[in-house]
Structure formats: C-alpha cells, structure tokens
Length: 388
Image (cartoon, rainbow, N blue to C red):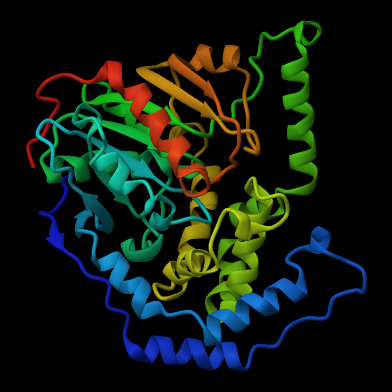
C-alpha cells in the first residue's frame, strides 16, 4: 500500500440530490405504532415525525456544508480506495499529529467541537495537528467497491495516509470502530505511534480467569454485557451477515436511515432518554446527511460483515506495546475491567469520567479534550513529527 498524493477537497452536494431528498421527505410513509409504546420497540414515532419535519422545513444543509468547508479537507487514495479526511493544523510549532477515528453510526462530525481546542490550546505545549479520516465506505471516502476492508486493512491504509501528509510520528485515538482501527495502527506501526488513546475497549474475559475470582466490578460489567447482547445487538448481527439486504432500505429511504441512526444516538449516549440534551438536531441530521448524500449506508454496514469474516486476521494477536490511555465514560455500552485491559495493552493512563457515553468527543468535548491532552503530555518529544 502506498498512498496517492493528497489533494484538496470541498463538499459540494449537487442541488438535484437535495431536491430528491426533499421530495422523499415530503412523501414519506411512516409505520403505525402501538398505543402506549415508546422507544422499547425502536425509534418512537412522534419524535421521528418532529425530526423529519425539521429536516424537511428547518434544516439548512448549505449552512452545514459551509461549516465543513471552513475546515481544511483533503483526499488521497490507498489500495484503490479513496480516503477523505479533515486536516486541522495547529498554529503552534512542534504540535503532535493525532488521528481521531470515528465509528458507526457516526462520522467525522463527531469531532467538530474538539478540532479547535486540540489544535490551539491555552498551553501551546499541548497542541495537536488533528487528522480526522472518514472510514473507507463512510461519508466522503465513498462506498467501498472491493471486499476485504476490515479494521486491520483500514489501519494499514491510515498509516499510509498519515505518511502522505508528511508526519513520521503521531498519536491515535478512537471509539467504536475507531478504537479497533487505532489498536491495529498501534500494533502495525509501534515505531511511529506515540500513544494509543481509547474511549471504548471491549475484551472477553481472560481464558484462564477463575469465575470465583470475579470482583463486583467485573460481575457488573459481565451482567451489563449479557443485557446488551440480549437487547441491543440485532443491528450488528444483521450488518454482519446481510449488509446488502438492509442497505436497500437505508439507501432508498432517508426517513428509514434517520430512524435507524437516531435510535443508536439516543440509546448509546448519556442523554437520559432525550438525545437533544447532548446532540443538537442539526448536528444529528448532518451526521445522517453524510451517509445520505454519499450513498454509503450500505458500505458502512458492510464493515461489520468484513470484520466478522476476517476474524483473527483483523485484530492484534499479541500485546500492544505502545503506551495506552483509556477513558471510561459511564454510559459506554462496552466496558472492560482495567486488569483485563492491562493483559493486552501497555496501560499508562486510566480515567473514569463523570458523564458521557459511546460518542465521547461529541457528547462531552471538554472532558474528551482534557483527557487526550493529559494522556499525551508525558509522551511528547521535541520534533515529534511536525513535517507537513
């Protein structure tokens, strides 16, 4: 894999795409809902109606497009796949490059509120050049057109992407799929990755663990996992086995796509049942738009299939030696006791957050930024790779 030279990119959605979206929203056919049922069956009908009405009549994509275009964006190509990224450079000499990687059903918009604080902090010694790629198959990276794009292959491609930007050394950070990609990057490029920061680590119990030795924390984590598996993983099974089938519905119906994504934003965040306590309506819709205008709902779902079928090939098979920091947010759906994590990672930083869920940088940008700064502070070196 060798990345093509980076080229400037601007978001320019054709007007006919937006006109088609408006027409679909206007003629949307919604299902019935059993009286008295709320979110337990899935996305609640009344709330979805409100979101659809705002999307149709109040949401301004062109304004959101301008906000995205105020950020430097580039594209490259690695192994036949386009990769789009935000490249928010710090004004401070010696800033450390860092790759922030999103997951599903997120996008680069998860990190919009942390770009400025990371790049231009009160103390210039904490500055980062911030690189936020769209996963292959997601958003403006465009659909994947070949099989095999699992997390480890993505990690290799991202290593080439960073090289094309001119950064020999860098940090990595991620949650959800971004966590798995970042772990693979640290494993594949230990001489280049300064540190690995994660806000999602979900590991099985060690094979030699004696159940009688489980403490209260581990028991609570395993019980929460059992509940999660029983009630929340239908999407993963569907996308991991039949992504093409679900894709026909998601690519054809913006309302279906919205309902599919907003249910996860609500269910996986620390929002007390109201997603708008942590996400604005417009930002939620912009996240959905990055799937809609690029027709990438199917290829995004396909990542689950590729990872499932790659199996052990797609994850590190030995202990990751790069210094690792973990931020544990209370409403994160996947948690792992520190002792288990330390068997697989070189943990040098562990923080337990007062609030926040699965979408850490989006929900709690200030807490996220402070923890990333704190973790990388002792790992920085003069001349950390500010080549550009």
